[in-house]
Image 1 (cartoon, each protein chain N blue to C red):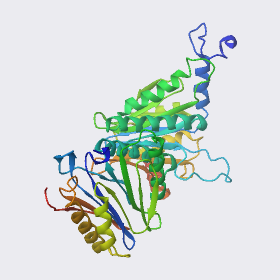
Image 2: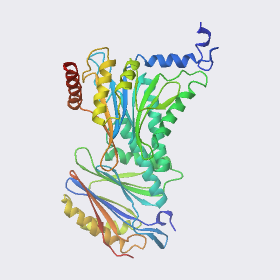
Image 3: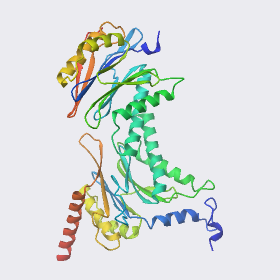
Length: 204
Length: 249
């Protein structure tokens, strides 16, 4: 049993034309038992910045609180919003500080930078980050997620199309993974704001 | 006469005074005035910004008002360098409380923390006190809107309205007669009136003052707002108009 598979998760962040989307499943399990179907794994960190935390649930929640703390301090001291690039790097630093006793969490970051350009990044549990311009995935079924995203992704999708692509990629991937699923949530971020939709999936 | 007991913070004088602390308090009486007024639906803080030369780069957002957390802010009178240390400490404390309890820090607790920090510089050796007085404005769900004042000794008290900095006695006496549970709008005008009185007799102009108000939005979240030049001018104009009608009648 891997500690990163103890609670279960599946998440995708994808870039469209002047927009980004981030989607995650809703399951919280304790190994084979499902405990909650409304567990939040994607968190809004700023008006146009989201972070998805996949992995051990306690570290998901701790990291979220830690990031909120650090982001809050940054905004108070610098009197400005944190850009996605800076946030991604901060997250990487926080993770690496625990290099020899890490947070069991593999996050993805999605946002629009100051000029409205999409930003995507994903990292491993000790802070190694990659930035992409198409999509990033994380969770217990990354094989499935990569397969679906690679097949369905097209560059420069409009927000409605991006939503469809994200939703279909996520739902199809989690069905072949026992540890993730039980519904989903998708956030689409455009320059005009954020729209959030719940997905109805197989409840098993 | 008090010379022998002046130089060390950690020594009482024979009269039972801490001279270093008193000298620190003196430093603040030369600083730009700050007024704080508790209103029915919010808090108003107004301060005199001492811009001595046009060569100074203008402050990005504010010169005297600092946000401490989503629900607390403060005005500073005294040594800005000293204040920066304390403001950072306050921000950390508020952040850590939120991290630990996932709830906003009660305002009095935050004020007490800053004051305890200041007090330790009056009792443990080798370090001088902070030459800063604060006006803290904050909101929590248990006690609503609150206004606190603190000084270099580490002492603090809650106020309905108060003044710190230069000519604070003149300001306080005006508040004593004119404070009457105002709304935020009325409090803004009263604050400008107080600044008019304390600012060396010259009428307050928007270049030399900073007006801040804290209110709740419709979701019950705290809103911090430093008035724009136009908004501040509107308040100054309203005060001038009112005083004109007073002198006319």
